[in-house]
Image 1 (cartoon, rainbow, N blue to C red):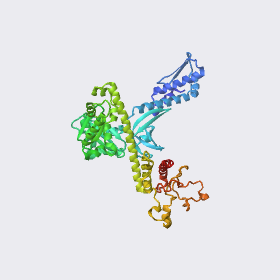
Image 2 (cartoon, rainbow, N blue to C red):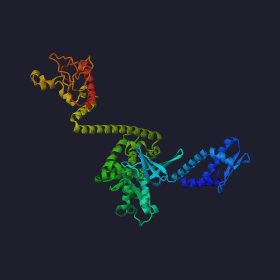
Image 3 (cartoon, rainbow, N blue to C red):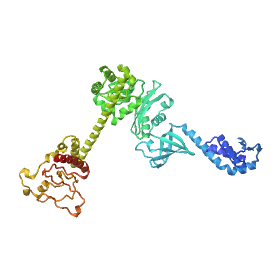
Image 4 (cartoon, one colour):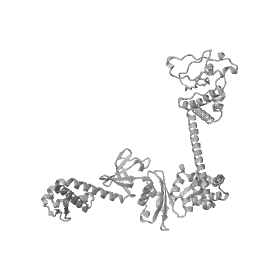
Length: 552
């Protein structure tokens, strides 16, 4: 092996791949040792060294110095793959060390392609990955676009380095502030805390070490030009700049801006801050979908609850009454718990036993009893709240359906009412519409059936497709959803004619008359196919109970 060629190889790898020259020399020496060991045997004592200045190779095998021609012939063929592998590993380690030092730093790359939601970005000589989960919602990236992101994670993947970028982390906002605002880069203004919901809104708390510099004004810039550059880079994300204060009584009202705060009550034991506002400021303090108070809580590190003075008084009264219902609770202890911000069974179930023993002068057994009761009642309250939420959703769905299809909405509402009445008598399971039509026949209003018009006879017929009758006690009750192929009306003797072959296999939508009761039990509204499943299930339950009554 030519010494000059070795020196040129090492220098070229150092310049192109940014690999340290010592790493390359060591890789060549290790490769030559591996090649000579295969030639002389595994037990041979082999030492190879390369002069770092001249490139000369010296090899000793069992104290014998090998000739350069022997080394070249063996090394040229056998050591080639080992050298390549070592160089790739060295290149990977160099890139890994380089990018690991940049984790959390802002980088700018060029979009190369999109692969099933994952965006590949060229950053330096590495293709970094911007996963879908780390992209701002609503953004789209095209080939050649310039993208700013932070390096979120770096890890080795075989002989390659995997660099993962992020545009959703709060560090991106901080790096953009440092880039756009010189006072932050110089250390005059410091960012103390950031809370962020990517693509929607962020809150940044800043402070100044120089009283002559207004930290908020410097971040906003003249006519807002500085903050506009940052928001445009974040797809129009709204940014609130808050003046930092170590006192939560000052920081919390600032974090809830633009809402005006009347009073802040701190509950140190549970880290809760109760913020009182006027009625007209309540919605603004909470924000859309609770966004404002949620971001403020993350920014200040306190669990913030927004309410009016009247709501606080009501909660205190309810909490005291609820706590007094627990066995072992005293009036004094209930008052102290409320003063510390414990306003529900859920709060009480997570209290530290030692704190409760100290507050009320209780024994460990008494504390365990109180906490156990609070646990049970908190679970019950959660179950009731979940049920109320479910019913509220169902009512909202029925209201929407009523606007689109009144018939379907009416049927579903009737089915819900019937289901709610299943725990009472069988008659209570009938819907209001059914109860109004029981034992109603054309003869009862004084008009013979034969004298009615054809349309009214069809409506009054006990076998019409929108009616249901009681089956005999010995026969099972079946219900067929209303359809287009309704059977013909019964003959004069009350028997139902046989159906055509085309109707075989289809259950009749009516049930035979009961000897004990010739009148119809109920008349349900004709509903579309989407509502028949719920309505039929409720009707079957009601008729099973009626059949049981008839048998008795």
